[in-house]
Length: 180
Image 1: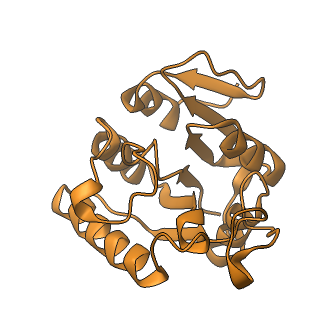
Image 2: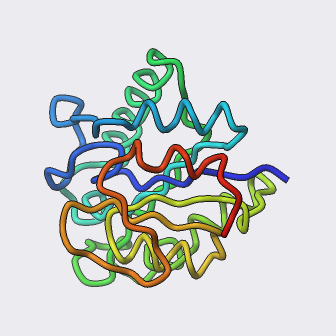
């Protein structure tokens, strides 16, 4: 069964400036291409899982998100790597508008996006890794049964089940390291 490197988007792939939906706003996090190239060399699928409540809040539309992510895919490919799948959740239970205002099993900290990816790609979640920048990312990974969780933080964020990292390159040795 294949394994995956799950990546949150805002704060992991790109700097989180809040509701990023245009390429002019998009600034890649240092090390993201090195990490994904190493993951693909080791046989991991690279899968994005991202809450996108800006869609549900009416700040930008689904088409804006899709266009940006198509551009992101091209940028990854231009750097010798790629994204195998992108899952997003546009809903928000409090601030969503219209049909977007609801609870959703795909909205992190719920594990829905990870579980859907596992079904779609027949993934071995216990052998997979997740890197996120928030506790909700870690909670989603833990609830889904992802084997190793990495919390990218420049702050003193802690999550008992996660290994803290201060930059993405720190994760590269874990792609080949046996689980401990």
